[in-house]
Amino acid sequence: MEWRNLYRGFFIGVTDLVPGVSGGTIAFMLGIYDELLAAISGFFSRDWKKHIGFLLPLAVSMGCTILIFSRLIEYLLKNYYAPTQFFFLGLIIGIIPFMVKQADVRKNFKFGHFLLILIVGVALATTAFIHPLDSTPIKTLTASNTICLFLAGWAGSMAMLLPGISGSFILLLLGVYSTAISALSNFNIPIILVIGAGVMIGFIVSSKVISYLLTRFTYSAFAVIIGLIIGSVFVIYPGLPDDGTFLVMSILTFFMGFLVASLANPSNKASIINN
Image (cartoon, helix red, strand yellow):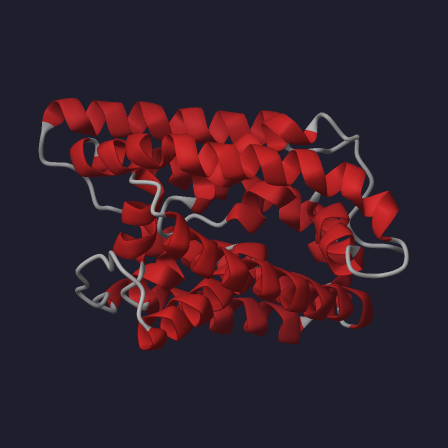
């Protein structure tokens, strides 16, 4: 068993609760992104036994974290929105140097790659101007909303695996985020199971697609990922607080997040590019 994945799952689970922050970015920061994709992709293959030791501690930790901390994240975002967002902003900006080093941008990137970064970054940044759908939390399941919640979970999970795109933000855009948080906070098991089933299917499909792209189109895929990470900065940027206390708190939490990302960058670990 990869017991270190217990603490890794904690960090990924917490970030997946926050709209605009990608669990995939944190997986990159922790140096397990390639292992995560391989384990999810291979879980339903003949070699599933060798992946269970990696996935089980990660999944248990993520699941427990999401259930336990959903109320705390809801509280922090309601009462300390800017400082909380600035902490995650620091995390995201702190991982960019690691990504640049992993891709060896100076050596491997051409004009087309930088153009791809710009296009993807701008495209994601524009979602900051999209007003999420207003939605009253769904409490009971019907035939129609069961399908919608399942598909929303699928879409959200695909975003979770892509660094820079937040699964929670996709749920927010689809008007399902309030339902998901409410279900987690109140242990509404039927709704959790429906969204969770969509998440699991989405993980399996998207992990195979992302692994293929990283293998066959490595540096173009890296350009897209870097563009997504840069674009996500504009998505989660909350603006500077007017209140002096919150401004100081935001500055401190930003540097805390940046420091955590810098210390966690796995510079001594294997590259996610399989040469």
